[in-house]
Length: 105
Picture 1 (cartoon, rainbow, N blue to C red):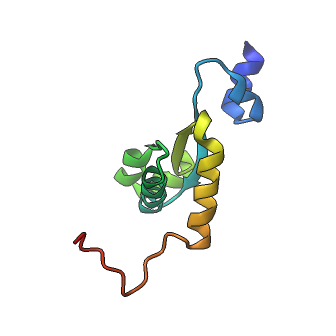
Picture 2 (cartoon, one colour):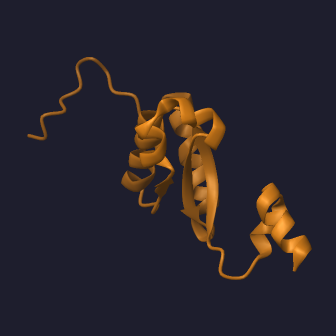
């Protein structure tokens, strides 16, 4: 049990094998707004995603490096899809043109 706990705390791949752990870390961001943008893209793509430590980091941005930033967590079953969406976000595929109509009409 101690090895499993140490693996969980260290964030090693063995942590994925722990029973009852179904949320996995997809990414970390020091700026909460960036994490929120990525979360929105994931949710829009049909992937349930949650932010961890976002409110704590927003309270005091100087805590962000100490906490490791805002974590984006996704269910283990969606990890591959989420990684693909994250890669698309980083390539700029979710960026809007200046001419984009965002009024919703």
